[in-house]
Length: 240
Image 1 (cartoon, rainbow, N blue to C red):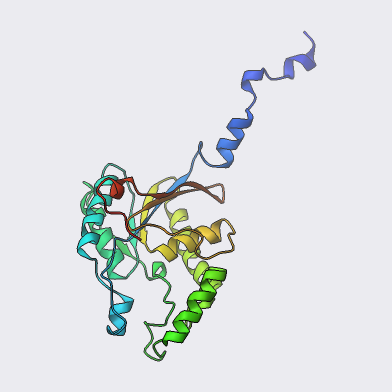
Image 2 (cartoon, rainbow, N blue to C red):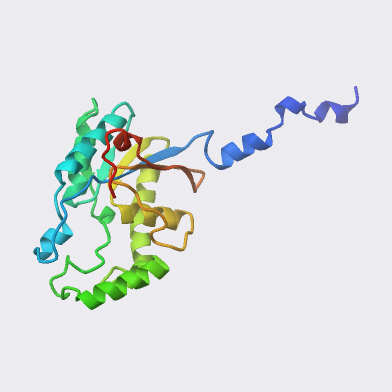
């Protein structure tokens, strides 16, 4: 037999285009899965409420139902860990997700997952925004969807870097595993914007207790799902 012919692989042994696409997008092969969960609905605050209430409101009655719904939705999934921001709405949602698991994981609180504070409510040195400032900021955000539109806000690039650094570190620490992150709509959008080089800070709005999944492997990220909401839609609990 001709030696050259013997070295030509059979067609079935050659990776197909589909195989290569699956590997590139981490559908197949080793990977880490991060399950991003937006917190449940918080209590709506009035403009006259104290600054601390604006910064860290608790869950509403609807929010408690949403948290239980997402906990039941994820109860059969195996998580190596559950992380959450240090704000009450995220911590309470994470606790309900954790309690639904037989493994009895205690959520790990990370300040790096905190939502952006666009009006500086976390710093008493900043004055409350005026009605004119709110209107101007809203108009500018409508145009750019970037956080610099708001007075006293953390800069967009700094916020993205903070969130991305925290979640990438978790992905590397949980190589080959699945873990959950309970955070905020701004955090989830900023992370995806950083990972996939999207210009807008808020390019989609995560519903309360929606689930978004991303894969990590070979030094890159790949999207899997965005804004899963069937678990709240089926109970007429969808809110933003």
